[in-house]
Image 1 (cartoon, one colour):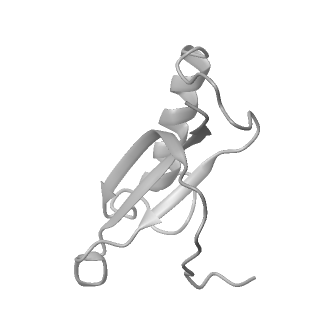
Image 2: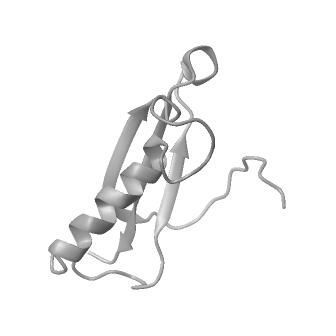
Length: 90
């Protein structure tokens, strides 16, 4: 599996969801559901369960996104900007 970042060109997407900025390992070490990213997913999915009408016109009901944005201080401070959500048509 290749996890190297790559730049691709595509039509723009309109995405909706929740975001987190900071150290995802502040509460729990390792890549698991107890770190801040896992908690972000849990919060987003609870929101969708409680508000199924909140995200209208999803492009694909079975597809969700996790986007990692490297900030200027990512390497220095270990802070990440993470977005979880879904692609919508409008």
